Length: 363
Image (tube, rainbow, N blue to C red):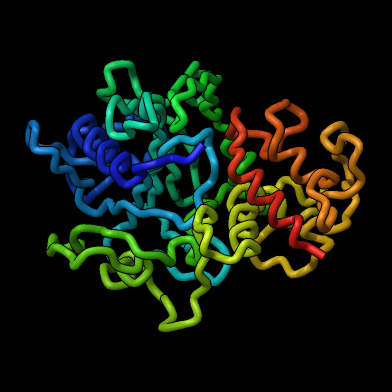
């Protein structure tokens, strides 16, 4: 299934978010509160809009952003926002997520249109996840939107939701959507045992995005490189003049296949499959910068794949996707077999096919 009109969906959802959480201001004390608020609106991350105007914007000091290759989450449309305290920019890092200061917040909203052939109509907000950087580390929480779509409520224990949509081929898709509980958030966001952001790495932010205006309210001149815009507007410090890596959009068929596959594996798998991650004992490391072919799975025997290995003996067999455990696991939706273990109930067939084609090129 291919999603069409992503930019349109994003604008629609952003407008809905703004209308639903009417608050304003540049100071967000709830980020540092020991007890998180029950309702998302209490943070004040989004301003109101004039009725029927269709014009929306985040509250002061909250900026929308985008990623070159995002994590797959059952085809959910995701709208991302970031806040960093004034005068305390995030610091550039070469390979990991940017070094955000205490008081920063990463806000990600998940939504589904009823019919992906008409992506701006009947869009339903499902949940908003927040990562809050407090003095003792990052805190992760999920807020589930109510039926009225007027606000979202904290769900520490997570929640299961029966969802359905019509895909771009006109076929109905029904599934059980999982809102993560607090421990599951830690399971995916743990690096060396501590919660950390996954997506906002410099290479994944190194792309053009239309911010509309700078932090002073001056309208921009169309799409600009996100990292450069962040640096110019006080959100980022230490950005080099040159030499910043750039991840590709894995859906870009003009990009090299190896780069597309490595970008997809980095975002979807490497938060666990890395030396500092929860799956470190597997010996399978899928980070963007991993140079060892064996560590990346090429002719590597699994440590403890169990029935997830099927009849296959190696994680990746060059030229033989049908014999590669990697393909079996990313194609499956069976608990105990599928990878990632959390965060999805559906298979992205297009990603599976891209990985198959990639393995066919390996020698």
